[in-house]
Image (cartoon, rainbow, N blue to C red; front, side, top):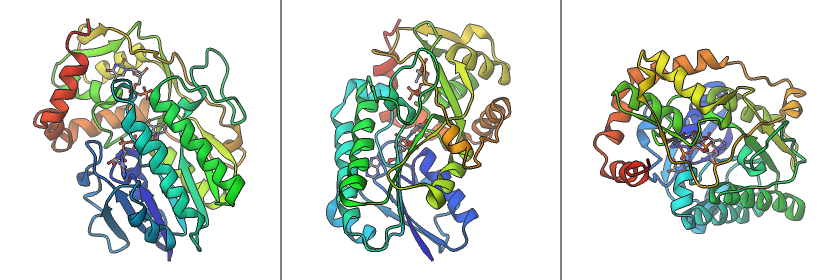
Length: 337
Ligand code: NAD
Ligand code: TYD
């Protein structure tokens, strides 16, 4: 059995990855380590919680006493655990430094003395390159993060690299673009706008709506990570782009069309501070290894909208009944213009 430790496995991408890993690799045992912050939910893993090849552990990646023994028996680590929402990093940066930087440092320290470790996949992000006006970011480009989230991720990305260069920890760095799909916490733009549209609520579009993101379906992302576990070269960085550059205003219109809702639900609101205009990745390095995104964006968006429509049991308890979500939403969107 290959022992795979997935940190942040109760979050959006992590839970999709755990499902992918168990389905694709009958000889893997997966341990999920997750603190279950506001963004982590055991519901995300409900179909695999009883799987004998999966173990769930609630805990903090920054807890050295906990992660030491887990790393000691791991063959592969896929490190997703992080604070992930840019807007929350703007209103409270320190938790991002604690989890994304210090938490990663604790894991890497444990990885130094892990006897059977074959790969440590550090999940970074396209946001570490900063805003790119034209062209596409390559793995060798300078990192120019511009908000506390992306700066913390860039610190973790380089820290992971340093543990390869200095201690020979088998670190492979993945820099994926914006993911979308099922189980994404409804503070992020796609699930927020889809669920607001279902309820006939306004869709708060930041600034002029011309910002561009490159959308990657979470299943395409999981396949790329699987490839990197097998064939990623330690010390190397791999961009994982969806190849779907979409302006926010166009994304918003498509969501409304898919749900047969009027464009009048679009509500222009004050822009995000330091809002990165555009991200775009050159993924030719991964393409040369045989990976391509398989999900056309129109199809992926339609199936994602359908998933939120059909799975209100998943998001209503957050949006309608979780006081913490309501407090966040009110603080963030009330009086925004
Ligand atoms: P998410 O917010 O949905 O999930 C994060 C998970 O990490 C949650 O389950 C949370 O409980 C857990 N967690 C947080 N702090 C922890 C701690 N101290 N110890 C243990 N667990 C902790 O995030 P996501 O969208 O699934 O993102 C996963 C990773 O992918 C992150 O590293 C993120 O930076 C990166 N990423 C995300 C995107 C995207 O579009 N979502 C794009 C590029 C990169
Ligand atoms: P988000 O899903 O927060 O991802 P990221 O900031 O990591 O790319 O936001 C995606 C884009 O949508 C980004 O340009 C900001 C924009 N956005 C809005 O216009 N309104 C919103 O309410 C949110 C959450 C995001």
